[in-house]
Length: 619
Image (cartoon, rainbow, N blue to C red; front, side, top):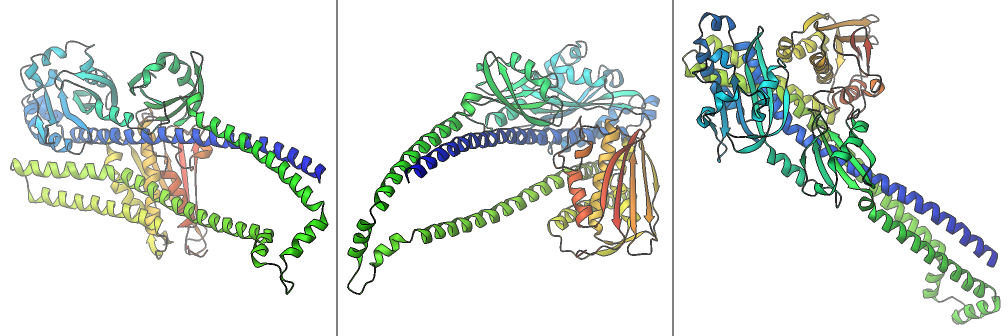
């Protein structure tokens, strides 16, 4: 018994050492994952605010590009004043939809508008949140600002003018007209090579600062917002205890190629853990924790486990000693049992309950198994909630552009009525276009609802009809970006399955193709879509293949094998949620019984979608 006790102590000690190391590593990994998640979550929140401003400015730029009549301007310079008058209420209406906005404006090229006229349409929000017109000339330095190329509050204008039709974010800068620091997103507008002006949206810096200050970080954690040059532009209050310049000079090179992650770095003899997430404009939100503070609780738990292990070892030795004493005297044990016997030769019931050790252990195991099943159900429920969160993110992404279109259509309709230019034909066209946009939004929400509720009945539908519905929704984006389309989809190709699922798949794929061509510097932009039948199209077992080719930039080798994984995105410049292709893959496999693949082909990217001619859920 003594030898067995010694062996048990040795094995227990070895087990305790291994358990301590494993537990510490597991807790460390969990803490690091929590830090990375917090940084990525806050980066996504800030990105949503920035994307709102970008969407409004981009929509206004597209509207100006379409509505500005360069021929009328060249014929009569007074056309500029007429155009400004028409554009002013559109900017005023659009400002209401910009979250945390300080102002929305169009700064015209003074060479076009004339140096003695109005150079800017500028609306800002008053204390009650109502848009009011702001005259930039009141401070008597407005015109002089165009002469100073290095003026910080005019960088949105001069830098944007050098990048035709390209969105640009500028670092926080002091705006003398509003007496506050603001972020600015601007975009220059060129019509047939003529520089019209710069659209811009200001967002108060204090809103982003408050969001960073309210982040739930580990005790002692510091938060930085870095621009594209890896310079900190917003910091948390306690960031002064670290040399930011030295820290980021050694860290940013290691996190420039990833959208989010976590790295370990040294600065001035101290070890830091840096978790980060990239915004849609390629800025980086980084959370810095000192290792000693971050893992302080883990070290405390490690010491506690070690202490408990020592206590259990001592208790094991003591228990072995008492067990040896107890079983070394069978006569004594027999006498104790005899004393417990009553006159009928039965053991006392209370003592019987104490002696049923095996049954107590079995009862304990059953209770733990029952608790584990409850945990499994809870995890499954949380996973479902996570899927619902992803769906909401997808709906937000798909609805942003249609809502901007509706806002612009209604603004144009109101202007036409205000200036007496509203005709019955224009009213019918606007109503028809609005109904089409609303129908497409309804289709989008039904697509996502069908994904969460996969018990809908399949139906017969035309592949070509679904494809042209998607192209109709995206026709403005295709036209603005100068994309040449080549469509070859036969009307006789029909599928028995889920129509909304295929609509959502094609919408995601074509949207991604347009994004890729927007980021590409290629002069020729082509979108080629064709459908073919693998096998007799009348045979229910045949396959319908839809090939979508775009002439955008090829996919990098680093993420080519991960494009269908959640949160993996190829949108380097503007950022993306990384959910579109993952959801599309799930839809095409689960709701259409098919497959999807994406690969580089020639000087572009090819996506092949295969769906079964006749799909049944039970298959």
